[in-house]
Length: 381
Ligand SMILES: Nc1ncnc2c1ncn2[C@@H]1O[C@H](COP(=O)(O)OP(=O)(O)O)[C@@H](O)[C@H]1O
Ligand SMILES: [Mg+2]
Image (cartoon, rainbow, N blue to C red):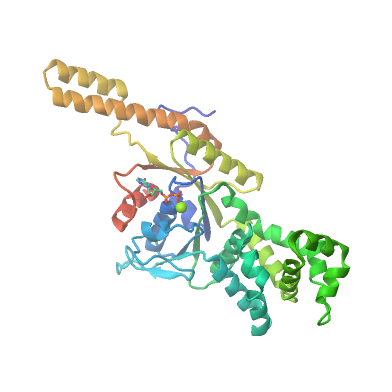
């Protein structure tokens, strides 16, 4: 363990600043457990990067309206990037801020329409009963569409920075593996079987004559299976493109300019979760580049707890009870600030190579540019 002072700092340690991490990135992924401030952080980064001249799009996979709320957008967000003016309308700002919310079914349809050889084939896929009833709800679809969205936004010339806000769940990081899962699926025997070219009218025959499909049909029902087979067959000729994009996203996630921001708050549960996320990232071979410790109690000056206690006693001796109460309150707050930092120390050791920034707990929720500005000053100095 590195030596830390009572506020959890390692004297003399200067990793890249948080601003450097953002400036050098073309993709930023914000992760961490629910409620710690990922969406807020994504909004602050988006705003500040735009002010620094970047053309930023913030994409939220979180179905909640939190990103729209954090940016103060009353009308909410859609599945298409929309430009945000609040906070970046200043003439001196050359960058742009855009935001969107991942709309999984709409994204799926867009991908299909963009890559189908002809409109009829696209229709066959998006109107397929299996897709409408089942595939859209399958776990993994959202994660996969998130990776397609990342690919699309990264390739979109309007943007030079994509900030990804992940959902508030433990499987939020599944999308990092989604392209790989798809590639493995495309290689799977079952998929190859279902994709086998069939002559018209022979489809049901194929299902009935392939033992494995027959077995599946017994479990899920032969209608469902026939719809599923039709669904996968409708992708004929498109699997190569899917595989290429999956490989491109895998490479993009591994690129030097793709950076991961871990967001944590000082509560014990949130710290445990943040360490878990750091472990997951490490296991998949990703580094944590920036760590945001959000909602910390501020330290209120450089003084110590003992100093505040001493001043409270002295004020009390002189009969200044109000002043004594204020000093005593300060002593309590400093005690909390120190306890939070002690709690955080193992996590901060865990992510020692990353740019760590502390963000204080604001008196109220973050849903306007003023609050985002305040947070930006803490993140970027
Ligand atoms: N530093 C802060 N001070 C006060 N409130 C905050 C701060 N950061 C976030 N919040 C509030 O906490 C709530 C959760 O934040 P959010 O960014 O939505 O978390 P997540 O995306 O990780 O679930 C929101 O209501 C937000 O306004
Ligand atoms: Mg969120």
